Image 1 (tube, rainbow, N blue to C red):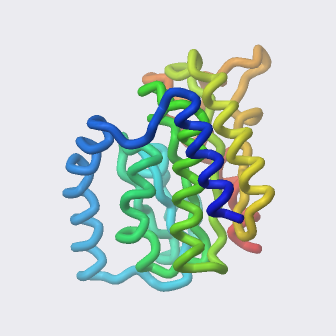
Image 2 (spheres, rainbow, N blue to C red):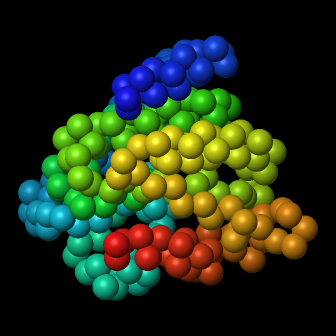
Length: 225
């Protein structure tokens, strides 16, 4: 079933004018290899515990102070974010910085950077499906949680792409065992329906501590289940 769903998403991406990996993505692979190698070197010196919670994705994950927001997890909270990465990068490196830890939960936040490169919503969703399938092929009982792509001032002009990607992923999660969608959009909008500037730092993209508190409150109960 998952293979069929991935194939359908891939076909939708091609129909939408995006046929998968190209030169830009090939360059991305070389760009992130040193960061991944650094994680692996850290793991050799101090291996993370098994059955933990791996956070993977771009700068919103990198900037998430896990010891502060999830003190109850302690060393079980494993931050494997690498800022500027796209959804394809999480797929590329899942076998190196997720699966080896045998986590009980994987928290995924990727796709935010994709929209600024005009990657279609269908391809963002397809990359998550590939990621989920790789995790569950190796670790069938691991819970994979997708945090919805956030609304932000800097990327507001792509909000339709963001909402479409979120909707497709949400539908996918509802049909896929051990996979869950966490919607944080409404909590990050102001009374005018636009991104709440108080939740974002001056760059209009990254979050303040209050923004991270919203994410933590939405995610926390799922980590206790």
